Image (cartoon, rainbow over all chains, first blue to last red; front, side, top):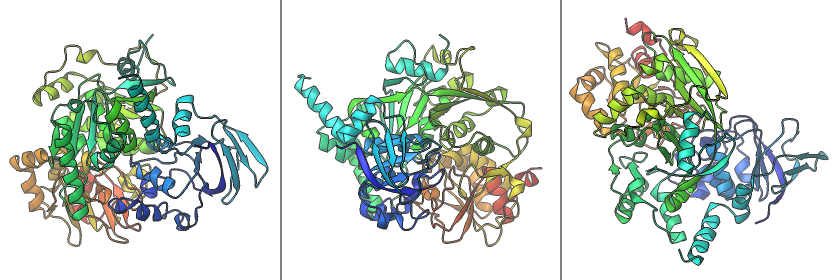
Length: 170
Length: 421
Ligand code: SF4
């Protein structure tokens, strides 16, 4: 799986919670239906207009709250290529990586506006804002998480692991 | 090297001599809580895809709570699938329609000091009331636990939160946590909140559960109250025999805390959090007089037996205001039974409250009691995110069971101390 992502920025503020990404009212609906309501309380245009490879940019504490994995799954379903934020809610951060969506910490001084063209290399931590000619080097993912994302998330990772264990006659 | 309780538990669970904050380790799980929401319905298809089973069914506790009782065809299907999963994998500790998972773990005495436990739900932190480390994760990650029995953790820092002195009338653990959401903030990933001080030592196990439950609202990795005699008594009452070394699970006196916060219990006033964040909190006087349509007593955090007793203390000899509805969904069947036996339910229903079945219910807009457009509710639950209890335009205030009950009587947000004298 490619660790280089290019797309437009969708910018949100601080403390975006996972209820907003996956509203409880649609818990029993299909992922298609749930994803249509993803972040609608904050930006009604998001779910309908986001393109494959686009990047969701949050402020502080992005993905706070509920453990619902449907929050990360809805972003994945909509084709979101990466998530950048000043800080993350702990479970959302793990969920995003477990679905193969790179989540990187953004420096406070990097300016990103809605619609900016971004290029992100999750392996090296290079972020370029091509619309503004601005580059930043952020912490790349620790090796065990890079392996997870490179595999495409936890499921492909587990498949590899189980196959390896079987190969070792376990 | 001096270590905090969190470091000690993670060292043991990872088989290391020590665990330094920031270090990435792999831990063996002692107990795995699966709920109907993020449990079998999400994990089972993945187990099938992997051709894998459950690593150790005896370490799994399975509970139906989010979708109980079934209110439509989909929730009925989810519950059936959950029951099938219990049978298929031989899960003995399956609690079907007995109450909310986080509350059942306490009632059944399934957590022990020093344990490393995980749950497929953010409020799994509630388990920390028993001096163990219990963390919440998403269902995808619980799939990994189900298959391997292990999970990676970046060793968190520990923040110590001490309370000293006596709490005033009409205040409770819920008020502590709403105040902390404002003062310590909700952006605390990478930190465990360890609660202590003489006020916490006198606090009941149920109230300690509230502290740890809402560590999730602080955004912390989890919350923990180190075990003491009271913890052991609670375990014995639940029919368990605590281990001989149970009280040794505590932080070293010279352990390194990332921060220490000290609070005076006497200064605490009843708190209310305004829409749409638990951090949007302040003394109840800030919002007193706000007219409400619904008052809701429910959830893991706010409808245990003690919460229902707080409600009854306010409602005794009073009635819910006309044009206001008070809905009460006890957190467990046992809380229901015990509240019936001790007269609590009689007071609540005589006041005109509407009793709902046990379960998560309206807390996450999954069951009965959800809100219509533009309605205003005060709730004993833990989160008031926009749209969480129903319509996006609904406004939810959070308060303690005392405050919710007093507000139901007045029909507007009210300081419960006015009704407790
Ligand atoms: S009662 Fe609410 S907060 Fe508690 S487990 Fe259920 S949905 Fe979550």
